[in-house]
Image (tube, rainbow, N blue to C red; front, side, top):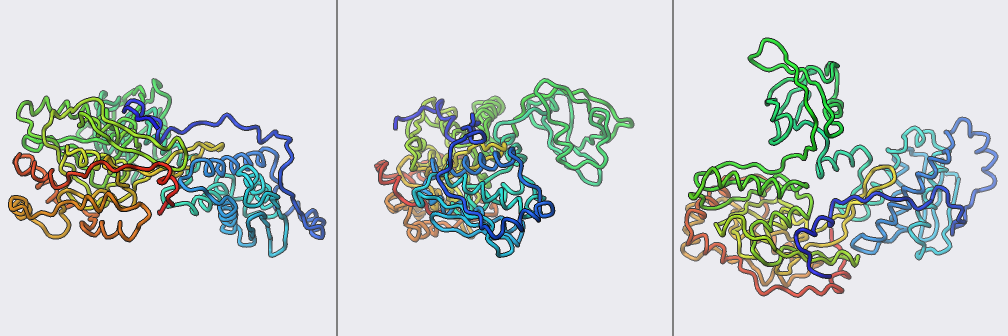
Length: 556
């Protein structure tokens, strides 16, 4: 329950922990459910065993158990609301019908049944019913899955990854729109986007059998060796790329850090291809771009990965060097930013705050109650900050916008943000896939919940507005105050009230140039900027009752 400094924030989201294993594959423990096989079917099934599918081997059965027990245990342990395991398990197993229409799964609070061509094949009865553990339900589901593999050639042919994707999509589909399952390949790509990978630092596209470099990332081996946008990659380590898919090319370009890859490059204006020998490094996809707008530093944040705060700090330093003492202020453009790692949003907000709350997090699990306070000092030296948001600004982007707005450090311009105010905890699964589970809600510094509501901008640009008309209304004192008292007293499960608040500045999904134009004008006009910031001065920080908050239902 103690407050956390920014340096301690790294463990909240995205820290996929591997499992040491719980011995499920070798456990001689007798299961706490009874397994029923319908006797008249036994001979018929045995007679057809050679033609109805391959019996799942011990290794496959063990993985099935590990997957289902692990996934259900994670949900039972950390999901924001106490789950009904019987309902989740049934929903997941019923998705097997999408792989074979002859398969049907029935069940209730204490039983799972497998039917094949409307004939009962297996029934798993859990003696504890509603009180059965995740381990019990996982083992029961694994038994049903093993029998389904045996009697269904279609399910056997689908393969492990497709089966797990099918079952877990059904399970998490009963939770909320932000919890999801990623198979091994997808999880690998998502980890690379979050934490980086061994590579050379280029983005590529494959069209008409040509591998074209579409961009070169800063501070990477590719940039240091002079690779350029629109260079064509003809060969990788002596092998032609002709006929390769984009993923195949990506896989060849990636590799162990400090390993090397040889590329044959064709560049426009050069008669002959040339070869480069690139030493791979740890590459994290860029999420920050900078450009100068007069004497204002404009930064676009496309997402939040493990390097976002460091990248932004470096770009701010570059902007100070370029603009010097003439630097008037900063624009943070979070429009279209879907979010990402929560600790990085905390670190980004912390760059601009001397003190104050950044965000608090509350859920069902005891470890979910956390507070984050600013600690390092303001990198912008008190200069004006404008934050741009729209209907596609979500999650970590909303944390930054709310933190700077509530602390009176920025004017937030645009439209109501997405309203994705929940934290997802990422758990690794035995197949190297991941399950992402909603486990807590964000609260802005003044206490209100961001979920479903989002951030209400200080200056709303919904509808047809010109910069001149908005400035005139601000000068005349006619721009409305953000409805802070109503916002801060509305409960997170009062959906109609949250919807009414959102309608005060309807979300816009398409970017409008007026947002940036207004931001630049306000930064150039300090008195008007100060007046705009005052439109969103929050009431005294709301008290959050941890026990009461943990009991509130999660409303997707």
